[in-house]
Image 1: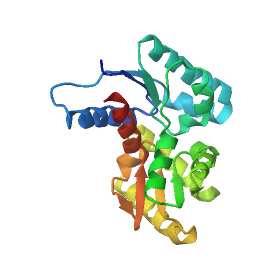
Image 2 (image 1 turned 60 degrees about the vertical axis):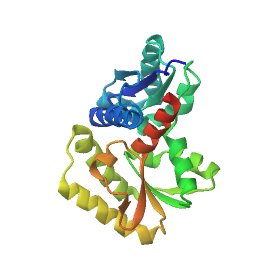
Image 3 (image 1 turned 120 degrees about the vertical axis):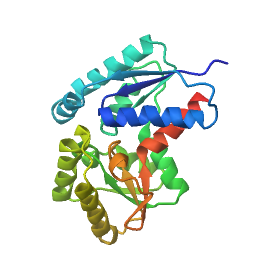
Image 4 (image 1 turned 180 degrees about the vertical axis):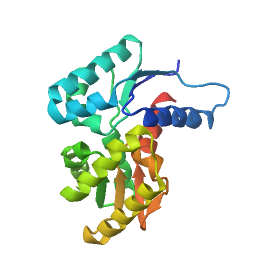
Amino acid sequence: MPTPTVGIVGGLGPESTVDYYKRIIDGWQRHDRSSAPPIVIDSLDAQLALRLAATDRGALTDYLAASLTRLTRAGVDFAVLTANTAHLVFDELAGRTSVPLISIVEVCAGEAKRQQLGRLLLLGTRFTMEASFYPEVFARHGLTVVAPNASDREWVHDRYVNQLLRGEFRDETRADFVTLIDRLRDEYDLHGVILGGTELPLLLRAPTIAGLPTLDTTALHVDAILERLR
């Protein structure tokens, strides 16, 4: 049987798309150094996607659906969205495309349940932290997701959009995130942290932060991609 082709809706943002590509190749070659998996990437404009997330979810769906259409025409067998924020409209996209989609949220919830992490802090863009898709999916697994308060969400979103999406991963920002997680750990009675933005694992690489296990959504998504490819 030929290896399936994965389609990647990328560019959301560029740094995480590169990270996805490298992780997929590295993961594949740990098992087979004689070949590489077939990958098709359609790169979008992260800033436009964020503006649409803020102002017009229907237009965001159309923008992402057009990318999936291009990937489908390129012959992919399944596809992924390399951004948590894009999962705002995951269900709508799944209903509009003929290729299966692998949800980053579902694979993260599965791992959280496996680790028995009952109450988790969600970090990401403002749109991800304030949306219902993470809490709803995790609730189906008997898990609870909490977001920071409004002022902390604004701080996280600002660092995400104005630093991480621009490829800036500063030591002082890393230290400030650790301080935030440490403060919220006891305040929210947390069992783990969801790095719910695919740039966050590029900043926060430790498997535990402030004594809490981290769920690297990029790594979990890539594992699911590799399982489908094999």
